[in-house]
Every structure is written in C-alpha cells, then in structure tokens.
Image: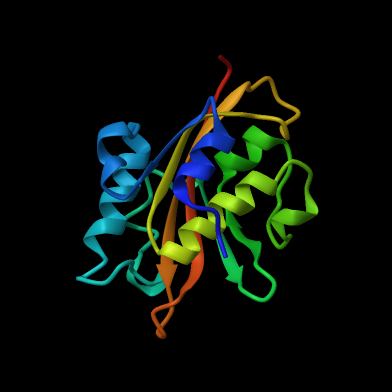
Length: 165
C-alpha cells in the first residue's frame, strides 16, 4: 500500500507535490501539453489506456517522456520507452531496466506507487537531482497513470524537465 499524499509531500520537501486538479495551474508548458492529451483521452474513465495515446499526438514532447510498465507483486517499474531528451539529461539509457536497479530511486517508487494505487496524476516540482552525472541540480516530473482492459494501472507515463539552478 502506498503512502498518503501528505506523507509524500513532507518526505519530498523542499520539492512541491501537486495531485489531480492541482496540476494544470502548477504545470510547465510541455507538461501541460501531455496532461491535456492524457485528460482528453480518458473518455470518462479514471485514466486512458496506452492504446488511446498516439505518438503523433505527443510528438512535441516525445523526447522528454518515459513510459514504464507497472508490476504489482512486488511493485516494480520497468522502463519501456525513454525519450532522447531524458537519456541526454541523465547520461545513460535505462530502457529495459527496472528503476529499482539504480541508486536514489526510493522516492520515485513511493510517488509512483501512490499514482498507481490512486489512478491519479502526480506532479513534483523542484526535486533535487542526485542521480545524473550532468550539471543539473533539480528536476520536475509529471506522472500519469495508464490503465489496462481490467481498469487497473499497468503503465506510468512521465514527462520530465531538468534545471541547473
């Protein structure tokens, strides 16, 4: 079971966490594009499926996204697709790897588990960047759930922005 949102917010300080309806007013332009696409494809469901999304619709933001498969028992994330902008920012390509194989991913897993358990988007702004060999000091991320035919979250779609300040 995942942490509650207030616990995640406290653990992520000084980064700021926004969930659900808080996201549009606290977003950055590329994240807004992806969020709007995700939201328009839900069709009355809590989240769209992967099949509802088209790379053509997301072409402006594709370099910045990552798509991870969700495994539930135990909870793990496996990187399925990693955009070139993300690879350049972190200095390696994690495609095909589980995120828990890398250092400093505990909070990523806690936030991801919350998104998967609640089937609700979560945005984090101002996260310290501990795992990139580049000069970035912090990053922002938006995590969007995707559901399977059974209505359960089976993938997470992320968009990231990296900062030097």
